[in-house]
Length: 255
Image (cartoon, rainbow, N blue to C red; front, top):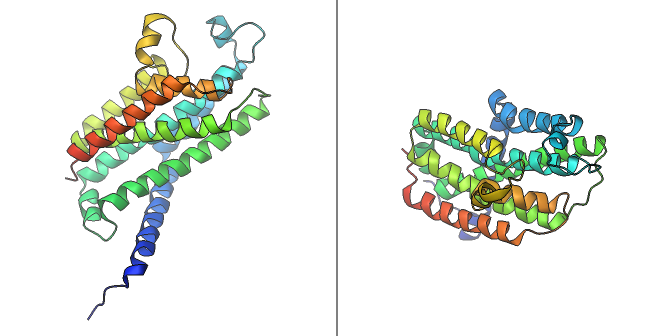
């Protein structure tokens, strides 16, 4: 007859299960061609394009004599995070839900909480890889701007929480095909007009500053290139993270 493990070993076993799920989720992302295109190739390609072409200067987004990498690098970092935490996880989770994978995993010893923690761990792991590559490319292109490490870490954590919770909310409430189309469309809008990559002036800039994409972009631009904190943007990310988490806990469906 099977015996229950000692009580003092159960937290350790839960941790091992979460770590194993994190490894599985991370490898799945890195082996998926579409995920790599979205998470690495497009953001890093955009970084090189904006840094090596006069586009930012022609649009008046960087003053004359200013290194375009001070805009291109934080934009690429924000796009990397949004690709992995929101779009990639929304699509992957939606199809796992469609094929019954989530329902099966939720009934295993891993449990629903372990599944969510595994996804969070995978997102953080992939984001670290993305950021290392982005900074390596930027340094190779001559970036020497200021970076506030604490502000960067705080922005990354709050941005991940906000976008991942919203991505899981979409994946757990909308059909997989609709999530695929919607998540990709939202990614394009965030990158183009949502304040994720570049700051928008005027009233539109004020509006998007209260959206997760605009707040993430503002906070990242303050941390990288500005070497400071955008307190308002960090608060907006915190609020979206709390709202997204509460909504996902309330309405997420495993089947």
